[in-house]
Each structure stands twice: as C-alpha cells, then as structure tokens.
Image (cartoon, rainbow, N blue to C red; front, side, top):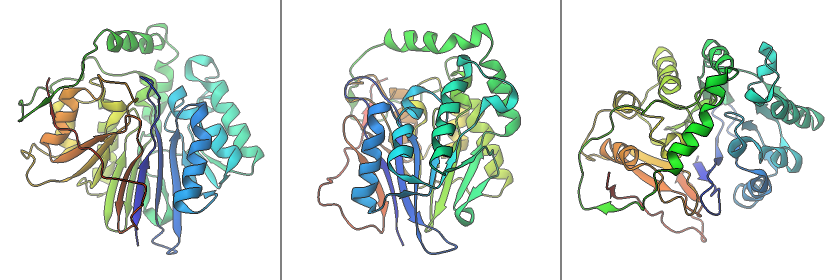
Length: 335
C-alpha cells in the first residue's frame, strides 16, 4: 500500500498556479485511486494527463477537485476532462445561489460543468463533511454557509476589485530570497489584511490514507483555514499532518501566527520533524514563498520545498522513480 503526491511545476517565469495529482489505496476496495486537485493554466492540462499516464499507469482519474475558479487553478482542467476519463468533478457553482456574472467566474464554471457532463463525468457540489473513497478523502471546507457569504462578497464593488490590489502589492515588493544560517525568530503575526473572498472560497481537502494524513489548502486564507480546522476537530480527525500544502503559494495574506499554531502545531524549534510541506511557485518567482510564511512552517517542524520549474514528489511505500532526484529543502529565509 502506497501513497504518492505530485506537485507539477506551473509557470515558466513568474506566473504561478496549482496542479496536484495523488494516488493512494481505497481502504474499502483495496484499489488504487487517482485524484487531481486543480489544473493550472490552459497549457498545463495535457501535462497533468500525461503525468498520470506515465507515473500512475492509467487514463482514469477518479476525482477532480477545482478548489476555486481563478485561472491558475481552473483553466487546465478543461483538457484534463477532455483527455482523460474523469469519473467525478467537485466544483462549487455560484449559479446555484443566483450569482451568474464574471465577478464570481460563473460563466467559466458553467463551461467546465458542461464539458464534464458531456463526457459523462458526475459533477458534485458538496461542502465540508463530504467524504469519498470510504472516508479517505474528506472535504474539510468551506461549509455551505461560508461559501454563500464569500460568493456574495465577490459581487460587491470594493471586494471584487481586491485581487488587483493584492497583485499590485505583491509586485511592488520584489527581492531575492536569501538563506540564513539559523532561525531568525518568529515574525509571522497577522495576515496583512487577508486575501480575497474568492481565495477564501477554496475547497480544502483532507486525505487520510495508508496511515498518512495530508491537507490541501488551495488559496484559502485565515477565515477559510480556521473554518476547515473547526470542521476537522468536530469530526474527530487528527490535525497531525504528514504533508501540508502551503496556502496560496506562500502569500503573506493567507496565514497568521494563531492559525499556523492551530494548523501545524506550536513551534517545535524544528525538532522533531513533523512532516513535509510543498509550495507551488513560478520558476522565476524569487519573492515567493514569503520568508515569514516559509519560516513559520519550518519552525513548526515542516520541511518546505518549492516547485520553481521542477515537479515535486512526496511518497510513502512507493517504488523509486529513476528520473526523480531528491528535492531541495528551503533553508531559513531572511525576513
């Protein structure tokens, strides 16, 4: 019994996105399960399908999750659905709640649903508490109540403009990440104003398989992550993760100290190691992940690896891949 998680590189230069594949054993059937979480940009969909064919040996994808409809997460899923046999698609459709405009990407979501339906893919619209594959996959967030609130916020003038504000803020702060010889001390405090409502609508996925636990966060920010943590605690699911996706490419708008403590555990001084964390960043995105975020993970016992033009592979009990070498772990970063 094995588990494999792959983060495919997205973004030849500074652009960044998410495309994640995973294979594990269904505890109810003993069969292999393949899931895809997000599809990157248009050019990435065919690469995802080829990756699944080459390394997992199948054209069948049991579940595709579109965490939220930003272009760097949804666009590649059209080719995934076109080129592979996708059994189920989980995506949240704002049209169900009367929101049909571009502010909530409703037309794009409708197109994806139509493409999936035409191929015979079952389309799900489920929230926190939904399980797949005998409980191995659990949707930890958002709750339907939170999603309704967030989709409404996206239609307001002030909040629908906020993605461009965050883009400007990020582009104005450019520096080359520099490695330190030791822990610079905790500087993660607030989430610096938070992230967008659309990012906070991200589907958060919990995977518990073969004795290992993983959490996929999409672009979720502090309210969304706490919403997911609340559900997992209420469901009695352990928060001791072997693998965690660093939210939103390591943005400083998606994590604060209190949430890091809840999600990852209190600072352990990196001893003993708790698990591994992957972050998807563009090949030349030298200012991501933010140092205070990467250091917060490292400080709490997680080794941090960034894609930067390379596929990353986390695996347990899986055969070695001859064409994969060891990942380069990020050191302490100057803040």
